[in-house]
Image 1: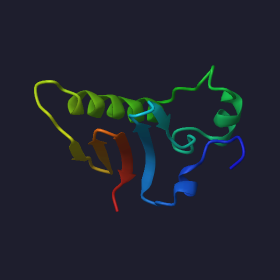
Image 2: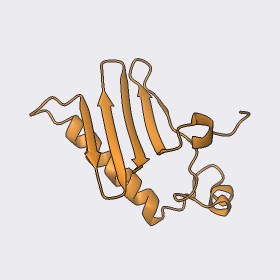
Image 3: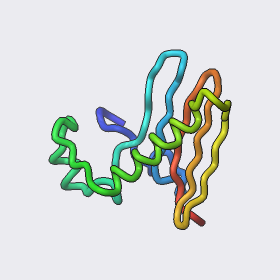
Image 4: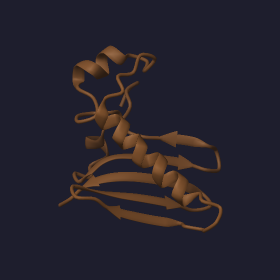
Length: 109
């Protein structure tokens, strides 16, 4: 893999478009490199170290949904360990255990 982040093609789950994984014991996050529709190849190359990151509408929508799932799953008034949400064109999954935190987006098949 070299110094580049792995892409979703490396993960090899065709329906999955993006994910965020956190190992809770060492507080380490992992996610694939952004690809279309989140970033074009040109945007990815121009962003370099992500200091001048191009927050387009698709990226904002992706992270807004992650934040929404995160707040629901960590709501102190109820304990949710697994959440699955279906939208018109995509499905979202949030899973929390004592060891991991996982969020993903997949397209409708």
